[in-house]
Length: 345
Image 1 (cartoon, rainbow, N blue to C red):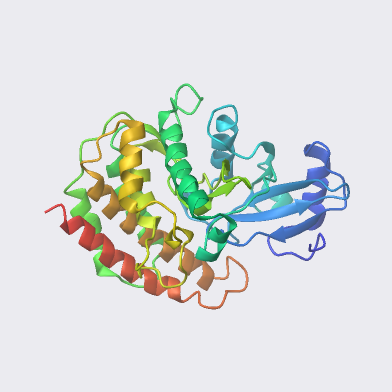
Image 2 (cartoon, rainbow, N blue to C red):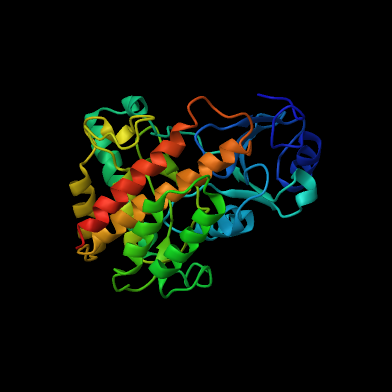
């Protein structure tokens, strides 16, 4: 693990002093290691002289857009969920002082366990185990949506009305602020979605980026922690379901050719089974789910454009090989969103 002053995004001396003063049991010297996988806020594993281990979250390097990388907001959400049935990593501390590390950051206890991102990662479980993991992904989402925002102290996290209209406005602004070139289909799909907004039911907590690889599992395949709460707000729970279905790749899919997601491995439930289990366990009507699938593709296109833009600007450090493919995937996702919204006509 890198020494204190050697890793990009961490001021070893200042962060180390803060950890010693603010995190119970943290003993210098500290080591830091960037955890691969995150494409928005940056996550580092932190170890200390006594064998303690934590996870530190901070925004990307450089200037971030609006509330997309608000560490205080993310810290608040994870802290509020700690006492609930929704599994999250326990919070260890929050630093709002940008003088310490150039941006606010927060620290969690490090949750060990497999993260199933790629098809090969799914080999940690047999086919029956993968099926059980898939069911738990759905059941945990039902738990999130069953929480009372007011009851957990997050009733003012966002407006409870007009969620989809606000999402369309927010991500349209995000698109304007992060795009590296013109992609007319992104604008056109946004306009088509705005003309077809379904009626919203009671607002729930919405994770905003709910997928299999945003959770840490136990060796037995239970959900140890749901992570990456930076986009959490209040709104229509079907937005989470639609985006989960977008991410839930099946054998034969070729939308994102950079990798084969874990859900392509044999044993995982199909998209239809995921949808049906959510409907059964939540009791919600999914008649409008195609709208939210289209919204998910459109939103993901904009998110990937932001990732591509930040890579191009060096905000993740030295670009990884193949990062240019993110830009091409934006076009593919815009086409998928266009196809999905056409099913509403």
